[in-house]
Amino acid sequence: MTTSANSETVENCELCIVGAGIAGINALFAASRYLSRDQKVILVDRRSGVGGMWLDTYPYVRLHQPHPMFTAGNIEWTLGREPSYLATKPEVVDHFEHCLDEIKRRITVEERFGWSLESDEEIDGNVRVTCRTAGGERRVITAKRLVKAYGLRVTPNEALDVSSARVHSVSPDYCDVRNGEMGESDAPVWIIGGGKTAMDTAYAIITTCPDREVNLVAGSGTFFMSRDRIYPVGARRWWAGGLPSSFALETVRRFDGTNEQDVKNWFRELYGTWLTPETGNFMLGMLSEGENQTIAAGLKDVVMDHLVDAVDRNGSTDLVFRSGATKEIQPGSWIVNCTGYLTKNDYPYEPYVSGSGSVVSIQMRSATMHLPSFMGYFLTHLLLLDKMREIPLYELDLQELWHRSKPVLPFAMFSLAQYNIGLIADHVPAKVFTDCGLDFDRWYPLPRRMIGTARFMLTHRRERAHLRRSLDAIGERFDVRCGPLVHPTPARRRKTTASAAAAD
Image 1 (cartoon, helix red, strand yellow):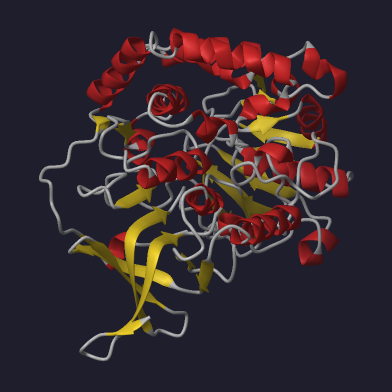
Image 2: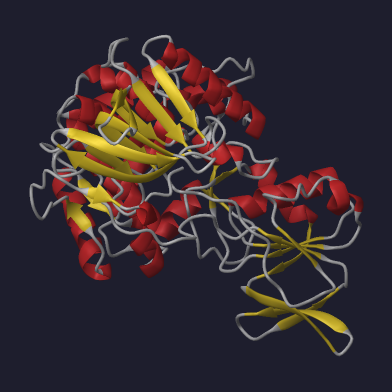
């Protein structure tokens, strides 16, 4: 720690990581493979502790996938549950804390919780990171490298603003639908949304209060990956299902950047499960066949439309839909906002790596993988191997693509990840991949995984030309940023303003 001429206190470190969610904790794990005890890491997060969005989200949330593959690097869980168990919110947060403790056994980490990033500026080979504490005080960190692990920038949902004074409009992030005033009420529930939050909410209410009237306003409908097909349990892991890397490869081979509807139909029939008559959306969520059947059996009504408002008129209370249709509902009904969390806010573009190669930014405007956890893990390895600028990774503006074509988004994400992981594999030590506990193939026994690894090593270079054509077609069709990162100048000095610095 030093004091500048103007009496400003400045902390010095080797690496600063902003964001203590799944992206940040994987970046920290990767850093622990390169740094020594005397090379300090400062971990900054605006929240009160490690966990990211898991500290904010609704209380009955569970992991989509079996818990062992939701971790930092290869750190094992201490939960003591069967591998197929879907960990709950408190269990996930506990595992984040365990991961941080394990990483601190290897390297020096100092936490700065309750701090928000205001700006970062590269000056004379260092990065000046300016933060604001919860009490409003200004703090400065000088680091050799910076990882801004924004991730998906998920923020809690607010209740829908409706006109009716006769309904209860709530958000699951602030209202536990199983307990309290809502749990004690027997009035009908209207769940707004058709994605994973809506399914979690419907399942929670139906299993907790099986006699409660529950209805779903599902928008365009959603299909999910069937957890039973992707992650068979018990001895079936030896012969049933298929490696996630295998179906990802088959998907990107079919997808050419223009045929998302055909690929969607094929993927849905082979790997999907759904309960709505239409399935306009697919965002890589998972649902088991049992969960799907329980929800379908417990719903009284499914409306395939988008809610605009709830209004009181002529003595009745009506839901008003985008199509112009209306539906009378019982006064006192509960309207639960389960609409999407992704891209609720528009953020300015920022490249995934700065011109100097000292600052990595993990976010949706310049995505390099399908999930922030993978970006945090692999990009930090590249950063500390000094290879960020020599590998021509593709970046994809997922925020803009979401606005322009939701149907193409999941298959673009598959192609992006497949392409960039193939490039990374040719430039990093094999241990980077063997230490990656995020790999979904790890669900399967080692002999099956070895087949998948051998196939990847034999084919990933041959797939590149096709993957490039698919990604280039997406960029051209939708006029979105999709291609190798190009810095306009080799700037030695750059600054991020506070408006772009809402870190997770």
